Every structure is written in C-alpha cells, then in structure tokens.
Image (cartoon, rainbow, N blue to C red):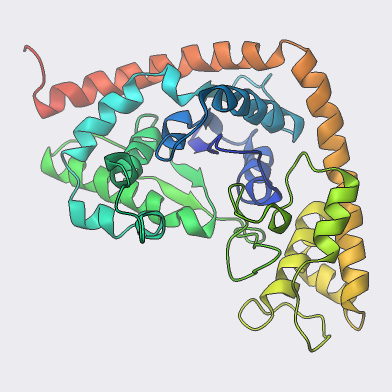
Amino acid sequence: MERLLTGLQPSGTLTIGNYCGGINQICKYQETYETFLFVPDMHAITVPQDPEQLHKNIRQAVGLYLACGVDASLDNMHIYIQSENPYHANLSWILECHSYYGELARMHQFKMKSKNNESFTAGLVTYPVLMAADILLYDAKYVPTGVDQKQHVELARNLAERMNSRYQEECFVVPEPMIPEVGAKIRDLANPLNKMSKSADNPKASVFLMDTPEEIKKKIMRATTDSDGKIAFDEENKPGVSNLLTIYSVFAGVSLDDTVARFDGGGYGDLKKAVAEVLAERLTVFQDKYAEIMKSGIVDDALDRGGEYARQIAAEKYEKIRKIVGFGRI
C-alpha cells in the first residue's frame, strides 16, 4: 500500500481552507493509502507562540481531524505529533547539509514572512527542510497540499533526487504533490487575492471550523465580490465570486460545474445565503462530533498508537540514511 502524508500547523484554529485543501483530501483517500497524519508543532515556533495556547491548539487540531471524518480506527491511519519523534529533527540536519541557501531563500513563505522584517529567525529559513524531512522519513508517495504549499513538496522532491544521485542509492522515495481539483486554495473573504489564513490580521476574513452559524453568516454576507452582478467561475477576473462557488461546491458535495449552473442568473445575495447555510450545517455537525471526541480518550489513544508506529518507521529510515552519509562507527 502506497503512503500518503500530510499535516496542518497548530498555530491557530483551523479554517475551512485547511479542511478543503487538507482534511477533506485525507478523508477521501484514507482507505486507499497508508496515511501518516501529523501535527507539525515544530513548524509552529518559526514565529513566537504562547506555550499554553500551543498545547491547546495541538489537541484541538487532532480533535478536529477526527471530527471532520478522519478514521483513527483504521489500521493504516497513523496520527502523531511531530515533536514527539526526534528523527524529524535528526534527518532535517542531514538534509540541511544537502540544501542550498539560494533555494531556501526563494521560498514564497520565507519571502513573504521575512519582508520588512530584519529579526526573523534561522528557523524561518530552514523550516522547509524540516518539512522535507517530515515527508521523506516515511517514504511518502503522495502529499495532499494546497497550491501555495506545492513549492515545499518540490523541495522535498529535489532533496530526495539529490541524495539518491549523490550516494548512488535509493535513499528516499520521490514524493508527488496531491492537489485537489476543487478547493486547493480557499481565498480571504475580505481580499480574495490572498489565501484564507488562520493567522490573518482580520479574523472576519476567515471562516474557522469552530465558528457559530451567526458568525459564519456575518462573514459570508460581508464577503467581497465585485460590481458586475454576474455569477461565473473566473478566478482571475472574479476571485471573490469564484471563491464562494468553490466553498459551496466542497461543502455541498457537488461538482463545480453543477454549482455554477445552480446559481446561474441569480444574485450575489442568494449565493452568499446558500454558502452560509451549507457551511453552518456542515460545521455544526463537525462541532458536535468534536465536543464528543474531546470528552473521550480518543485523541490520546490515537496519538499513542500512531506515535509509536511512526517512531518505528522513522527510526529505521534514519538509521539507513545515517549510515549512508557516513555517521558513527562501521
């Protein structure tokens, strides 16, 4: 069974964008692939975090994975926390020594977060290498990702190919990005030219998985559209309307073509109302399940089982790579 791996940073409450680009993909393929689903808490501290809040975010993230349909009871589902596995950092150091500053400095996320900021940490530069280690440790063939994160999977591919070539051995499986046909990038409701973010300066621009129906309605009804009044899917010229159509398509479980046909000839108000209703309905279901899960011991059970298995797989891979590069005694 081929392997699939993904993770969502616990740097804030997850958004519907995280669901569309990540969690929904996991649910779709969880019975097809051996799945490694982890909480990348080590990535979260590339920017300052409150430790107590980070602890809470980690547990909340796992609870939301499960509430949204991830099945921890499957034998091929492995859920774990990145920092509880030392081999991620160990392999990252080896990969850093096979990475070039130029390719790291060209990363979109680094350029965006370091712009006009002279006090960024070294971790902001090197965290894409840690991300590559996250993937390559498990020989993952597929990595569900949004469009904005594809560049990081490409770095993992480059490092895998570089190591395989340099040492003339199959050090790593070369991973492939798995980008959803619909929902790969959910946009900011206030500025649809930007990606929806859980850490956006304007909280009204993002719909969070824990938002109430009232909050959802307010945010969607205020979403930026345009002035021509025509409903059509055109991401370049009508990004706001296209974003609403995408959200409806994913959460209503219908194709994008059928969504466009349903609202053709209607007004923006009708579209927004329908989007708000379908979001409120689906998120209420998620939230009810989340409340049940957090009262049980499911989260810790899943993390204990998944963490033990992940450490075993990671240890085997790290020992292989450690010897290949010449570490330790013969």
